[in-house]
Image 1 (tube, rainbow, N blue to C red):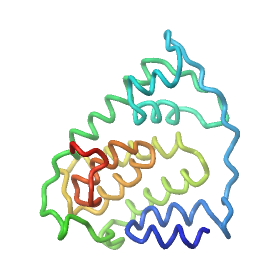
Image 2: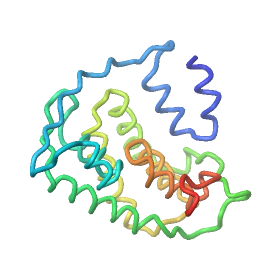
Image 3: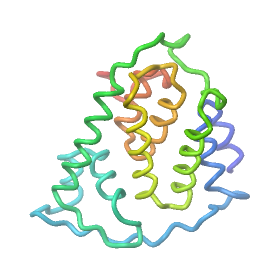
Image 4: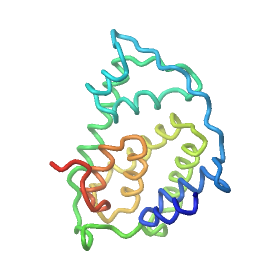
Length: 194
C-alpha cells in the first residue's frame, strides 16, 4: 500500500519526504500520541459551530500550535484571532507572486540544490517534527521560516517558498491549496471561484 502512495506523490518532493519520514515498511514510524481533549472557553459552544464560523484552517492552527497533542488544549478566542492574523500575513505576502507562470500552469519539483543548506536543514527539521507528531514545534518552525521568506517578494521560481506552501497546506488545506494554485504548483483551484 505504501508503494502506491509513493507512486502517486511523484509531483511533490516535499510530500514524498514527509511520507517516507513517517512510514517505515508500511507502518507508521512513530505511534501517534493519545489526543487530549480540546477545552472550549470564552462562551464557545461546539467545535463544529466554531469551524463553520472561523474556517478549518484557523481552527486547526489554533488547536495544534501551542501544546503537544497529549496535553489538553484550552481554546480561547484570543488563540483564534492570533492564528487568523498570522494567516492573513501569509496570505498578503504570497497571494500575488511575481515571476513567470510555469509551462502548462504547473511547476516541476523544486531543485533541492537551489535551496541553501541552512534552509534545507530547517525544512528537514520541520518535516521531522511532523513525522513525530510534534505539530506545535513544526508550526513554530514554520513561523520562523515565514519570517525569513517575507524579507523577499513572493516569487513563483523560489523553491523555498514552494516548500513552505506545501508544508502550510498540511495544516491549512484551503489556504495552502489556493496559494499553491496561484504559484502554478497545482493545476486547478480547490474552489471553482478562484
